[in-house]
Length: 424
Image (tube, rainbow, N blue to C red; front, side):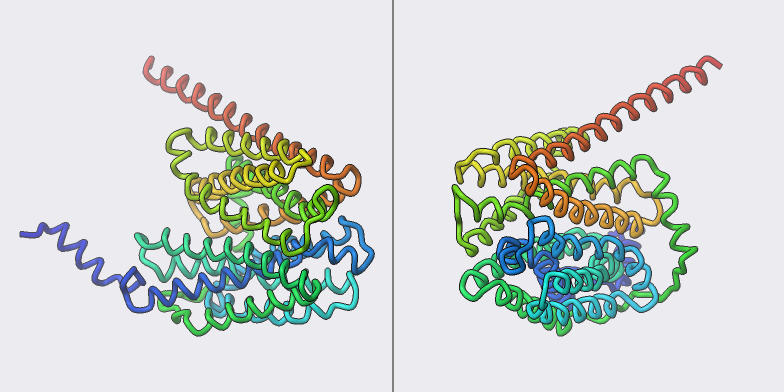
């Protein structure tokens, strides 16, 4: 005969009208957010594989052309927190729809930019529009999906992000090789438009959203505790530094592979981004690494893997460069997974704001990495970009070592207090 607690659990489950696998609307919701992730991240990094062609078109240096990437990621970083608060007033579904529509419309205009300045400006507008998607999607899932199914739902959305970022670069690369870089950007704009249509047709209406108004003062009050938490600040810095390495490498790698001794065509350069699939594997393995090595041990392994990849990529052999990219990508995604998941575990209140702050730091790192990596490449070639990456990696090591030292000091202090209490 069922116990009282079993009956209570069954009643609670029956009363829970949120989505779960097998429930009406769950599959539609999953495909909708997957399509949104593909569309958004195909657009966000759409110019990255095309930078050598854009430089040639406008007679621009690598550092100048890199702003077509950095402007988008920088605008996203600055607006992700305000737009996540705005979604609490107008709804997650409405915010995600508006973000995708504006980003796609701008994406279809970008191929007709008359000069580099207009291209950078339109990319900034596109990044600002896309800022409304990530935090709103996470909040929508948290409100509409049952807790036991939440991790899988978020995982599918993140997979859409990864596949969108990879496919956008590959599509632009091959289309640009056949018809020019403007055709490449138009192709990815049409791909994103299809994803946006699928999202809007499939996304279920929100049934558990409660409108609220989080004004500037309330938002500042929610954010302030996170900015004063030393551990969270270290995690934000680690995320930004890892992304600095990644942004620098993938912004500049096209120039390196287009030059001698490689001289690869545009389509093949775009296909190099298939290496992103390694990141999917290393992200999934991050949880097991933390279980075996602890959070700091997993970070040290991620840092070591990234540094090894940077050094290996210095060789003038294509196999060595590609293997270096594999190691850099694996190390980055593992480190990012450890840092981002640690933010959610560390924040006791305002987890949405804590995650939004991490995303801001993450994309600011991407923006800084893209620009500084291109500047370093212009000044010292690929070796200059690698040096920048190693400096960022050293920053991660320093922060992690400081965290280890702080934890030991805190543990000794706590042990001392316990001894004093026991003595009395």
